[in-house]
Image (tube, rainbow, N blue to C red; front, side, top):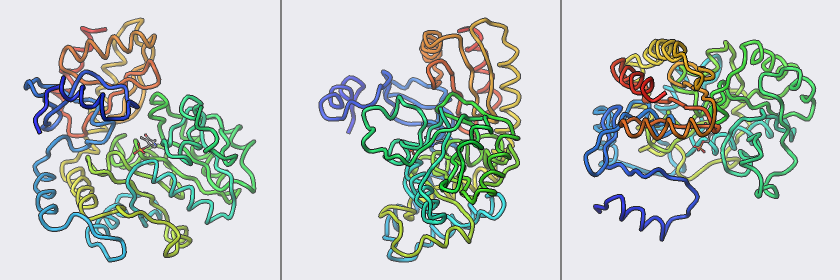
Length: 392
Ligand SMILES: *Cc1c(COP(=O)(O)O)cnc(C)c1O
C-alpha cells in the first residue's frame, strides 16, 4: 500500500479514532537516528517513538534477527515453554539490580504497571496504591488510577476506584504521612518523564525504600521510560543507588516491538501462581527475540556509556546557553528536559526545529524533551545544538 500524506490523513480521518494530535508528517522508513518521509526528506529523530527506538531504526543486527524469527515462529501460547522468552528473562536478570531476577512479560508499559499492582496487592494482602503527583503510569484503568494528574483522569473517574493516594514527588514527609499498614505499593518513577523530566534527590528515593521496608509495602519503580540504558545507567534507580522490590519496563526494552515486563525477586514472584495472571501475547517469540537483540546491541556497542557521556556533554552545552527563553536544563543520560519560558515558546521551537529537519518532543506543556536513540553520535548532537541555538 503506497499512500501519500494527504491520502493517509484522509483515510485516517475517516476510519481511525481521532484520539491523537498528530503532526503533519508520515514516515516511510528509518535508518539509525534518521527517519524519512515519502518525499525522501530526512529527519534527525530525537523522539525515538517516545524513548522506544533505543538502538535506532532498522539496526542491521535487529533486522536480521527479526527476519529469521518471523520465518521460524512469531507466536505460540504460554500454554507451552517459549525458548526466546526464557532467554530474554535470563538477560534481564543479568542487568537488573540486586535480587530482581524474575520477569513476567506483557505488552506495554501500562500493562506492566497493572501487573505490578496486582502483584503487590496479592503479595501484601493490602489494597492501597500510593503514587506521585505529576507522575505517569499509563492509560489503562488501574495504571490511570496511579497516574497522579487529573488531566488524564477526568471523565474516566468511575473506572478508578478509591485505591489510589498521591504523595508529593520528592517530598518524603508526604510519603511518610500517607504510608501505612494498608499500603500495598509505593510507585515511583526514577525521573518523571511525561511530568516534564523531573527528578528528586537520591535521599528521597532512599527514604521511600526505607519507608516501604518498615511498613511492609512494595517499592515499585516504574522504569518504563528510564529503563534499559536511557539514563546512562541500565536502570534509572541505579542513579539513586536504590533497589526496588519490583520494576516495570517497556518502551526501550523492545526497540520497537510491543513488550513490557514486570521484574521482581524470586520470593515476591511466587504469589503469582499458575492462572493468577497472564496475557495471550505476553513474551511471544517475536517480541522477546527483539528485546534480546536490543540488550545484546546495547551491551556490545557500549550504549549505556554513550548515553552517560554524550548526555553529560549535551546537558553542559544546553546549560551554557544564555537566553531568557531557557529556564532549566535537567535529566540524565539521553533523557534531557529543556524547560522553556512558555508553552508558546515550546511549540514555536518544536516547529522551527522541524523546519530544520529535527524532530523533538514537548511534554508537560513547556518542556522540550530529548529522548533520542541511544546510538546517537556526537556529530548528530552537534547538529541539534547548532540548529537549537539558531532557533532560540
Ligand atoms: C509511557 C509510560 C507508561 C505507559 O506505557 P504504555 O506502553 O504507553 O502503556 C508508563 N509509565 C511511564 C513512566 C511511561 O513513561
